Length: 400
Image 1 (cartoon, one colour):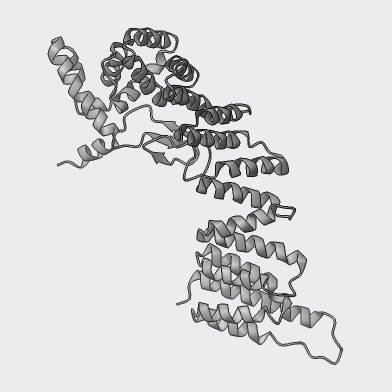
Image 2 (image 1 turned 180 degrees about the horizontal axis):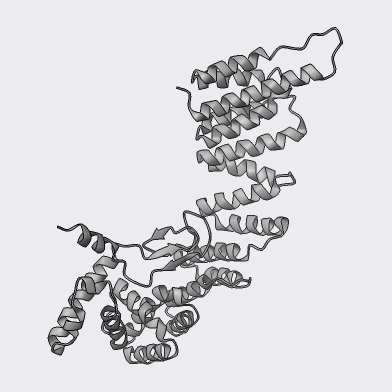
């Protein structure tokens, strides 16, 4: 039985057939001429489609374009429909066939190239798509769309220098600010350079990333990582502390680094003082510090351990499984042992549940992704602030 998509294709043929008939019926013609019949080629193509003979319909339609210039717009529509249906190979054949025509009008060439480039992009043939989009980005009426697609290609291929160039050109042509997007491109360049121990270039890229507005917090975090990797612990600590002072959502990334540096330098007393000062100014950060400590298994720092303890005692969902208040009323030794077991269990649970979620589309992941893989937006992920108990709750509800 013909599918809905088949009827859409058939409808496309009928529409063009009717349009052709109307033009012949009401357009200029000799008075002695009779009204023209419906084009038999359209009826043949329609018959192929209704019988689910899509390949035969495609071949028939490709033959029609060679003899009838009036069908070219239908070819564009048909190619677009094939692409949306996922039949990209057929869309490619249609658009290649149009471009191959020696008599193709100049105003039709750019739409054909743009359609073919989108076909290649949909098929994952990024090198071919890049070549066509690059051509269209130079003076065609599809400059903005081509540069948008080029940015996406360079993001996928991690060609960040090219992404910067395309992004800057797009910013000028479109008239909209892409400062945040371009800043992340520079940060990607910096991280790539740092991975190759080219820290001088990495620092230059970070400077460029932070030169625009709005500034991305990623630039500060990248600077801190570079300082850490080059042994400049003083600068690294200064930057990490500034990050958790200014932006709560990066506590999950900065706090483990801070703890690691202070422990290496045997300066945990200084860490205690710094965290106490932070909590005195921002007491609401306690739960974020506790969650970060649980997820990263940070212990041995009194102020952090106290945050974790209070977090567990005040977590209402956890009370469904453990009588924490009773544990807290026992002697200190047994109390600490019991709470340590609960903390260990929470750490294991947190390791199996998503830690970050995109604020735009809801995509979840275990680690921080600066660009959401789902909606492609930059810097929209935020960390969870509490351990997710959904799995345990479902288990307890279904347990006999």
